[in-house]
Length: 255
Image 1 (spheres, rainbow, N blue to C red):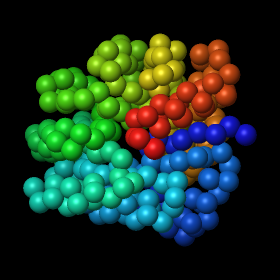
Image 2: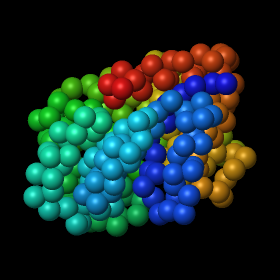
Image 3: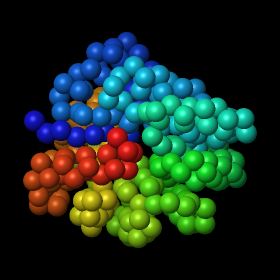
Image 4: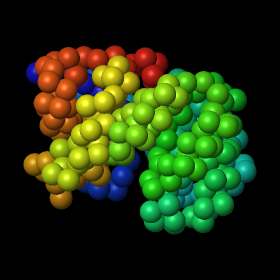
């Protein structure tokens, strides 16, 4: 049985409300050795910390998502600072820019992203990035503001040219279910190009469920299908994919 880390999930989501405990425990019985639970705002950050406190193999990432940037308050940083003192809070995020939905206006997104980058810099913590249809602004802000190389582009689905930009900056790419999709040409090319030492595996659960389970809520054990596809693309063994990406996640998050 392959063993691996889910580098980005949302098990606090309401889609797990009825059977969360059973579902989480079953993941750890089937090859998942750790889950990193990401957040979108203060409320979900607190929930992520609660999950990390309850389950030995869950770790928390705290911060404000671009969708929720419109609701960010300056005092939220003080709450995040307190949460960051918890031993299993391992990074700041997910934060960034999302120009696909624009649930928060773009100036507000940039302002809050700036604050999240500064917060991660101040606390010397890894940073987890959400970027959708906003590559230019994301890259420019990170190049200008980010100090330290422990930065992860989560749910990466971009073209090889974009992958090269992030990799040249010393960043990691997190690959999820999209790599199994039929129309996944860009991410397939990026996975072929990127060194395995710069890749991690994720679900973004309950979203981005891989083939053959599309349309259902995602689970960490489905990373097996992501591993299989990456092994095919790179012409290496599934065991090597699992081993190297697990080590990458351990080193990045310090777990």
